[in-house]
Every structure is written in C-alpha cells, then in structure tokens.
Image (cartoon, rainbow, N blue to C red; front, side, top):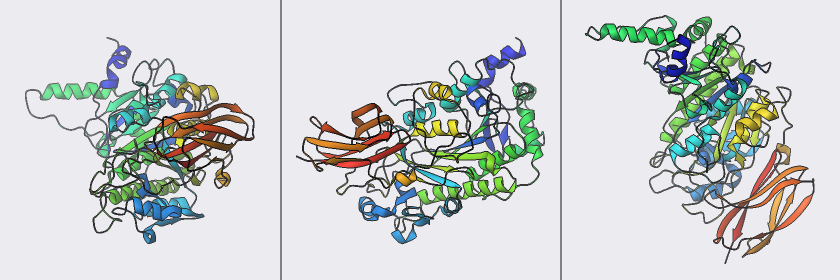
Length: 525
C-alpha cells in the first residue's frame, strides 16, 4: 500500500504519540472549512479558540440578572448568589457575574469580553449526548447530521483533501483539539478531517523528542515498531514540535488547573508560528444536579470552582497573548450543550435546561452584553426554562463572517441555512456590523391584552429585511410561527390565536436581521 493510501485509510483512527503538557491533542488536518480560517482563500492570520464546558452550565448563576434580582432569588433561594457579592460590569448596572469570575470581570471592564445572552436553538433536546451533537454539527435538533460545522467548512474550502497535504503553502494542521479525540465538530462530509494524537506522553517530551521506553517483554520490539510507524504517520508532528520550540518565554498560568494547561499550549503554538487557525479545548463537571453550591455559602462549591477555573484560565491566556504580542490575532468563545432550569431543586442543584449565555474573549471583540437578561415570571415552576434569544448558529455565522471573512455562499453551505449576523467583532476586522446594543431598551415586540385568554394582538416594529416572529413555551420549544418572511421597515400588528395551547407563560420572540427581542406573555383561563 502506498504511503498516501495508508494515510487516507488509517490516519483518522490512528493512535498517535503526541501529548501536549500531559493533554491529548487531535490535529485536524487541512480541509475546506479551516481554509477560510487560514490564508488560502482569505488573507488572514486570525485564530479561533473554542472552549467547551461539558455537562450543561448553569447560566443564571454565571451571568446574573441584577435588574430582576428578586425574581432570580425567589426561583432559586437555596443557591442564589447574594446580591452584595455579584461582580459589577463597567457601564452595565443590569447584569453581573458570579463572584468567582474576577478574571473575566477584569477582561470585560477592559473591553476584552462580550456576553451573548440566552443562546440555544428551537425544539431543544435535554440529552447531554444528543445536544452536544447538535451544537457540534450546527444542525436543527430534529435532524441527525454526521458532519460538523467546522468540518463542512473545511470541505468547502479544500474539497480534494487529503491529497497533497501537508505542502509548502500549508505545512501545519488547520485545527488542533487538546484533551480529547477528534469531536464531531471537525468531521467532513466524506471523511474525518482530524488526526487523533492520543498517546499519554507529555508535551515537553515531544518537544525534546523523548519517547516512552518499551517494556522488557516479548512484545517490546513489536511495540517499539508500532510506535515508530505511528510517528511516521503523524504528518504534522515536526511542525508542532518546531512551533513549540520557537516560543521561549510565557507568563505564568494557574497551577492545578487543567483548562489553563490546555490554553497555555495554545498560546505557545500560536506564538511559535503554527498556521493552525482553530483550536478546541474542553473541561468537564458542569452537570450540577446536586450540591452545586455549598449549603451554607452559595458563593462557593462545585460550580464556583468550575467558574473560577474558567475565569482564571482565560485571564491568564489573554495576558499571555498580550505579553507575546499576538492578542489581536486570537478570539475565544465558550459553549455548553445546554443551560439549567430557572428554578433550583431540593438537592441544592439545578436540572437540565435550555438556553444559557456564551462568552467571547479577545482584544477585537465588541465589548458589551448582547441581548437582555432572561425574564423570570412570578410563580415559576420546576419545568420552566429560559427561551433562546439567539440561535447558537448565529454565533458561528458571525465569527466565520467577521473573523475569518467567509462569504455568503460559504456561510449558507456550511451552516445549511441563513442566520442573523451579530455584532461580535469590531468593525474593520473583516466586515463587522454596527453595535446594536443601543436598541436594547426599545420595545420591539409586545401584545395586548396581556394576560389574555385565547386571542391577543401582537405588535412589532421592524427594519427592512427578513422577519421571524415565534411563540415559545416554558420548555423552550417553538410552538407557533406567526411571521416568517421579508417585510418593509414598519410597525405591524397581527393576531395570535392560542387555541389548543395550555394556560401559562409563553414567550414572543422577534428576529429581524441582526436584531431580536423576547417578551413574556401570559395565557389564562
């Protein structure tokens, strides 16, 4: 078998001896999606870091609604953060952060962080595995897609992969995953775009070209041979080693912090000259059904430790990027497969929920809070959820468009349909859009009467373009679409007939281009 054929058929599943600072790495080979993230079709040296928070993060205790603190406290009095302990955000008196997140508070107050409120998707799925697949594939929840949003983009840019890679133009992997085998995020339509590097050897042993000795057994020679073949099939090992060796000095990172260890590696490889454009890191523990906080002090406990780990890691990473003179090239964002319920449970925890905030970091992000704090109606039940304000795929689309300069054709091909463009990246980076936060206080959608029994009139204000008006129930599911079409900029009034729907709280969601707004309504008997 020729070397190229061997690689084509075996490398994606090969176990390869590359560990970075004690963390497994997956090298995602050059492909179409990440090409737009490189300088093949676009002139950019931008880097994206994806931070996965496994388990379903409790967004309400991470980003806290100060403007409705009484509703927040009443819904979760056994885990609510005391109002006096909430960290303030500069220029925003409505929203605050968990007290463990001092590092992210500092980044926000210095203009290097943004908060996207209530990210999610219609028809939410509360299974860890299925919802993770949905976020990684970038698909609707009702369809099963076996490709990832990054993988499709790679295929769009490099339809002939893996033929001819690596080469003089792109000698490096286009994406690297640290701490896990290749995820669905990077799977292309015809083959996996990743190379798994999972041998538990430290990063510094790879840099120094030190291998684990084979055991003195009858299989020792065979093991040595297999390891040597594995090293030969790792096409990008030398490039990673060279980049790591090019970075002489870094700032200190928090100790005993697995996420910090991963981000330190990312900074080292970016500074070392690796042309990789997407990195993915992850950490676990956010499935906080019980003992989410300390029983006597809700500011400490399991969730607080996780948020501190995140905050300290990201702050050290941003400081290190600035120290090395590369912070303008890198942005990061967080995601978790879902949020938690509004109301806490009796086990001092929270159960699987729907929408939750996403955080974006970097010197080129548009600083601020995008969207409004979640509405928490009185009399909230254990089944009530936070409806999504933003479709998570709008975040993907905005980053591809504004950070990696992807065009409209690429966006629709990769994300399977059109999504609104959000003001995430500063203007001039590619095609950033104007900050729309100034409209956050304007009522764009309302209804009368409210409460109502069966009929109510929905009033909404638009600018010219596509308009979507949805009705979402307390479980986060879209139960009715009232408008889905292009309209002129104007004020419109339409009827909403709720026949067949149970009494209770619903949410009207308006999406109009880059604008959206969510309002609660109440159906009574």
